[in-house]
Image (cartoon, one colour):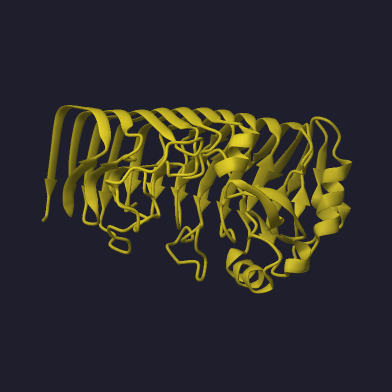
Length: 400
């Protein structure tokens, strides 16, 4: 397999921006080849991968995003469930169909988010970019790398099939030493968006927002596109800070068959947040959380419209004005939630409810199962608009 070292194309580790030189190495890479980023810090603007290639970052290598937003052109991307203008990410694919893309190595992808967040928000020509954004691809592997300091989400996988994320580290709130990235919000770790056959394993996610979110479009546009997220497995991962493993709230193409198992949650606000609100339509079905534990001593976020508890399912996410007892009209925008399973779960949190389940008054959420669940929170357990709640060996306690 041919190796295309970016230094052979003129890239240097001297603080200058070498977007063209690094892109030249990518463009020159033939089928099955590897573009190599050697040890050193290499600064770049937006880069675009192609099919049948590997991007390898050696141990000691850092790909650092330029601080100049002119190096990140504004283009159309799906983001937050809608096609809209966004600043390019540090690593991208275009809108064509791609196959067989690998990003690997023990190096670091640092999107320089603190600087870019402020610049992109100030210029405001589009939504903020991500660190890595892979779309319309089959057979995607990302392994061993560290992804950090995105202007928004760390890793966004859109319209992809057969994805493996293995032994990666994603830091969108703090760096590896616990130093906080200032001025960044809505910094999800990993977003799986209208994808099929995804495995995330052996990874660490330390997020400013949702650590991992499984999504599939927003409202009418998401229903029209109609690409669900399905067959997603998240296993043997560690979550630190943020909001754990979320489903939704953009889920208008549908989400089903998601398995979160054998994961540890340390000072995250939740293990599970399942969010299906009015206007989204579609469905969330067959979601399993199994063999997971949470210890949270973080009180930055307490019970609010954006966060209800350590295990929560919410039809009124982000809505503190609607009366949960008054039904709305049932129409194509009314979502369905059916089959959420919690098994072998332990929770201890000092923020919010231990358990909070609230379906829609016009279409109750159905078939929620808890087995071998021990949960302690500031508040205990609240349940409303749920049909067929089954509990076996469940112990919920509270401080208040």
